[in-house]
Length: 146
Image 1 (cartoon, helix red, strand yellow):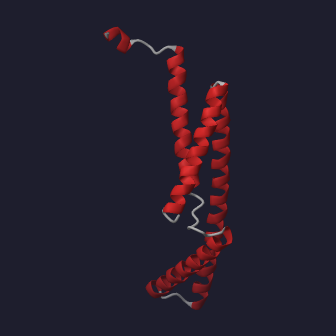
Image 2 (image 1 turned 90 degrees about the vertical axis):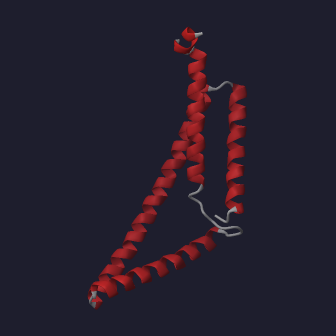
């Protein structure tokens, strides 16, 4: 019995273990990427953008007011800092957009690599599981108002 615990796994066991790890990674990345599209229930894409812009503008004004109060900024400093803050938001949005695209590409590439390791029955089941995860994620987003 002790020899069985210390022996190396067979080729099939290694492949099974590898596939399990890959599936786990895909699951984690799928959940993470899904949360990037955080619209509330019943919100269409444009509505979320307007809401975000309002929130961002409110945040911008509060931050600028706090800096004005704490640092006793001149009008010129306030104007320049305001522009820098707005430019910073724009750069952050662009980087987030790139990141979302990279995550999507990584997920697609990973799925293709996983499918190469599977037989046709497993590929069918894998695709089914992926769809089920996607549906659960969408359901949870609606349920939690994200």
